[in-house]
Image (spheres, rainbow, N blue to C red):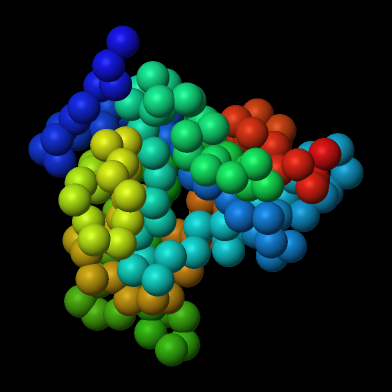
Length: 168
């Protein structure tokens, strides 16, 4: 069966599963008793848009191992609805108070398939966790990373489609 190819205009449904590759770095996760604590660094991204893959596209390309790319990596699985349900993040001033006029950013997951990029390999499943409106301050993105990490940690072992081998 050929993989389902979706263009950038195909929105993600709330019940879709997304996969996030987690590299084998100590600061991305740590053991906490019988489960793994996910660090906000597991969602770091220079462009402040962490990459994820759509499960419904990668299922025919190898499932979560497609996202894993290398056997030493782990793969987290999240629901789009959970990402979108993160309360809006307010822009704060240096004293930790909301700026006036108030500015808020909501988390969303948007399709961003990669095709023909000179550096990155083609990836029809590629999406990005982003803040809307875009151009959020870095401090807002850091809070988003923390909320994503807490969400994954709260799910415990169920958050992992593939547990990192060095954490087993």
